[in-house]
Picture 1: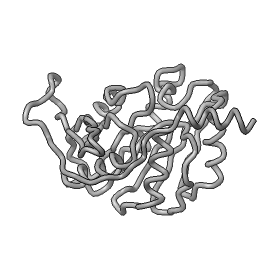
Picture 2 (picture 1 turned 90 degrees about the vertical axis):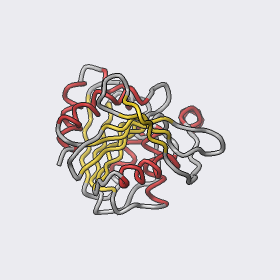
Picture 3 (picture 1 turned 135 degrees about the horizontal axis):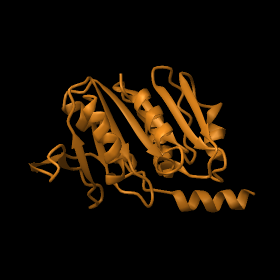
Picture 4 (picture 1 turned 180 degrees about the vertical axis):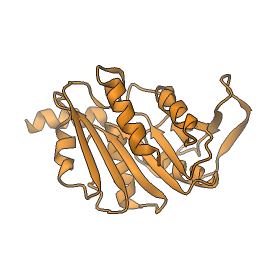
Length: 217
């Protein structure tokens, strides 16, 4: 059992180094005209791209992708949030330094409350990053079947955890369920789909609505 868990964890590991630099927001709009290109600060020569969806609410959301996904996979949710006046940043990364820089970027746009969203290993990175340095502007997090991570012991951050009951890698979410502090909401669905795959399965609409209800102030 321990060997199986070790194999699962090794597959999901992402780079979690933390760095600091400046942002580059492109002048031109992307073809759809409702979001801007953003170049995240480089870390050891690696540069991540992001898409910024403007909003007029005090609340903003930062999305982080996990393995086998791209930032574009978050666009449907980002567009729905934008229609509700909630801004967002879809980051083509799930690394710790990009979590920190996403918070700084959204803060520079005037957002006072920031939610972090990530699945699988990206969820783990969010937890680990916040446990090391919790920014007071972070008020919410959505974790889709997080692959472990340091349980957040903070009562000012609202937490939503989503997991498939038949997901073989969902055991980490169930372990975190009792370790993460309140306030928290734990939702499980009768499916083997893991993390971001939950948003393309039979419970897509239900899960999307749960996330929107939680994220929109």
